[in-house]
Length: 261
Figure (spheres, rainbow, N blue to C red):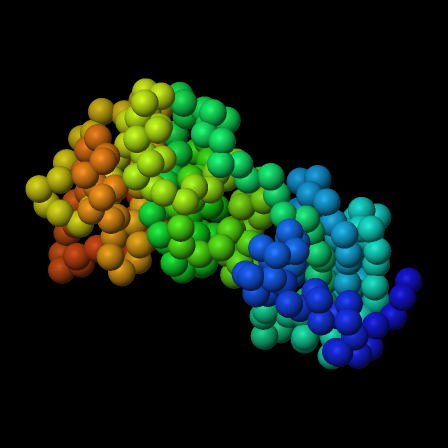
């Protein structure tokens, strides 16, 4: 196995560049960090082009490293200095891999029209996206519909999702209003979540098959255009002096209500 010790090695620089969204889009590759997440990628049958591991990681995370190295196109042993160059965390585990981007389609005909989905309207915080994905998978949602906002392959989003973004069906769209209308044309009902006491309480909304719950931007909420296009506005009744929940927490409550039966 090739040993890489220079932070300025071209292979190292190319992998580290994948922490940037533009580099990911241009190359069709993304970088994963952490023993569990890299092993999850292999178990999810995501093509792994390169693996980078430190000697200490091989001793500590033997099973995950062996699984990763058995699937990777090329494997490199790295030192701690190179690991720091590749890492997006302060205390890296020393396990990294470069993967091919997933087949996340814009073809809405692949959406289950009797399913329940979360739609994000320009969600910006990658931690929120990752947490939302983890909740959606745990509660049994059929997938995510991403419209603008942070990158699916953001290292922070991938870590926060604990692999859920790699496993869940995820559909990306450029125009949220167009997507809402297209889903409605297929018989799905779209519910825009808002902070408004005049909106219908989520627990009182008739539910069932074919539902889409829209989660808005952290600062501005769901855009007015999407609210106008939705079938209904829904809200989480608040007690005490709290006016709202953060996007990931709100999504958890809303999806629980839609999926609990």
